[in-house]
Image (tube, rainbow, N blue to C red; front, side, top):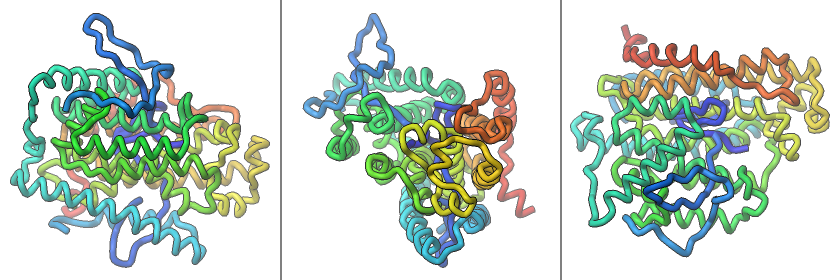
Length: 441
């Protein structure tokens, strides 16, 4: 059950900006860190008179053709606090602790690499984040095709992530199009193991998809949608590793249906959701007035992803059980007096309620940490992030309202509540008072 993505979280099926779902880490001796469902492959034929709809029946995985186009200053309290929450959520066993450190180090190394890319870009642009977009490289005959590619990505985003799409309209045209392109790639990737063709997907198919990704980053896109992302990664300081890691998360879904402890689950959540945050931060941009470290902003993005994925898992317990999957820490289930059989039976007992309450508490801690990073983003990027964060967080409230019955009742946020959340999110997006600056005064 891969997640949805981005710090732009999906409202149920939308994306989420800095996504990474799941929480629970242990503090590293020498480093700090916090460690949606994406989509489907489809064939798109340009037609000036009629636009095609996203159709699952059009999904394809052809590889025989190509689309013919183209340490720092400031307080570190944010990342430190993230670590504190991680430590609180980690399991107490020595073995699990060692594993947690290993998982954190693995992901944190990726975080540092992404942050370094952004820092180098900032130095080149003299601190003006609005200058971090490289100029278009226009090849003869490709300008219109590339424009169509971005438009198509926007159409897909508008259809499947309505709330998120609305928020992106406040972003600069360059950032908006780039986020659309990332959304679509993640959605297509997720559909490989969670879409209509999932039963036919093999590790070899994922290897081919990764090879296609490598070509995309080399400027050799396979199709129209790849072309949009290829152009995006050429303009922004986006690294390939998070994209590779997301594909690794899809591989994990093919071979794994149980997780011994939270650390194992945490790594999975990074792969399928946290990666989106790393992809998105360079596009969203960090506010010039922010005093947060680049690593701190990335960590907050990861915290939101963790929270989102934890929420996905709790919401979909019943659906996943029907597929023979349990995305819950086995050791924590045992400590609560529960087993796989209890999950498959789908009975809401006091033991289940108590277990779920603790899982919800963990997710909310990460939402809290994520909120501290949203105000560090550029002003035009905050609304979609706030909207997705507030809406996704409400899913936890709905699980509680359903008396923790996530076996037969699907928790969802009503349209009325969504409409109320949007202006609240917009109001919060106007507040550019950095949480770190506030902490220092």
